[in-house]
Image (cartoon, rainbow, N blue to C red; front, side, top):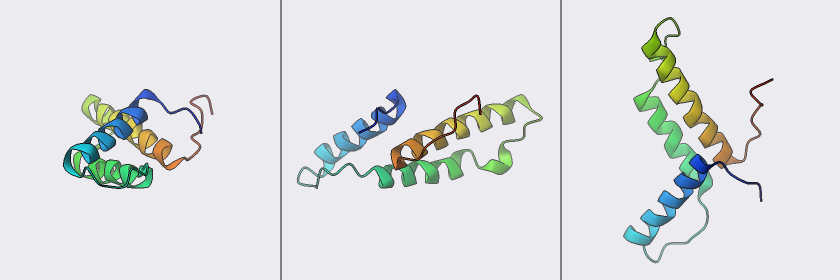
Length: 86
């Protein structure tokens, strides 16, 4: 198993904590594809691409947040991400 970033680990921990609290008899499978899908759905609602205008500071900030969340979702899916130097 590959090491996950602290952000991805926090998502997994929150997911398992919610299962324990609200569905104590639920299967404890990782559910990573589900977690990634939830993050992507939230991104589309909170920081849709059309509001990430790179000509404004606010738009650049939104794009940065969107990119970080998409990286977490990709990590949960097990996708290989390009390095920042690529």
